[in-house]
Amino acid sequence: MTLVEVKAYLMERHRAGLGEIATHFDASPDTVRQMLGQWIAKGKVRPVDNGSCAAGCHCAIRHDEIYEWVG
Image (tube, rainbow, N blue to C red; front, side):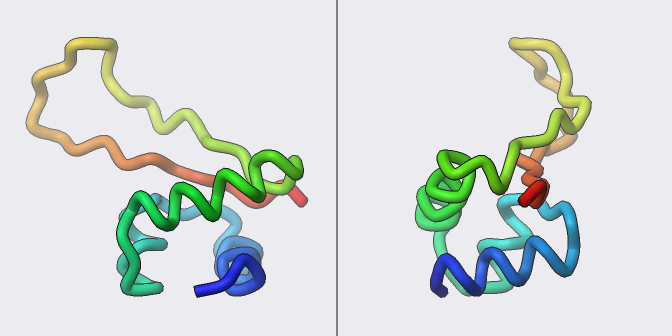
């Protein structure tokens, strides 16, 4: 997985969850988050509010981090 591959993946899909990206590239979420951080710093990617519950939520729904290509 390279930065260019992550860019192409997000450009094609426009939005994707951290877990989805990690699964696609067979990488850990932490590795993907680090790569996305580089695109965020360049202003090409932004995290999207996915409507997660308020702080301290104890619901059964897993709230994935969502990222969007804005380049």
